[in-house]
Length: 137
Image (cartoon, rainbow, N blue to C red):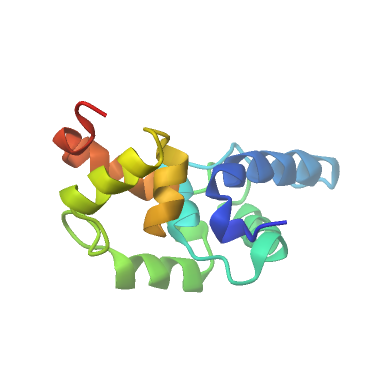
């Protein structure tokens, strides 16, 4: 089974499952904000699914039953976001490499992201800023 960093599209589903299970354990949460989800998805997940589960448990406790925000996440995730945040496209991505990857993947963005070595969300964000990279593909 591929590591979590290679299956970023599974993260929201796993989070929903962890939140559902925590409600049976007496811990409640109103869910995860879009900003917090973006931080979670961008993280590399060296500890895989167990680390994600631990992160959600931590965030539920810190949020005290409210919507989980980025400030409720463990320090290592917030620090990772600060270290890797930048304006503009990822250093790994440029229009030519993205276009080449999309052509190679037959227009499949998930495959193109794997070819580029980035998360699918990263590729989608790049394409929002540079839509001409996928024109006529």
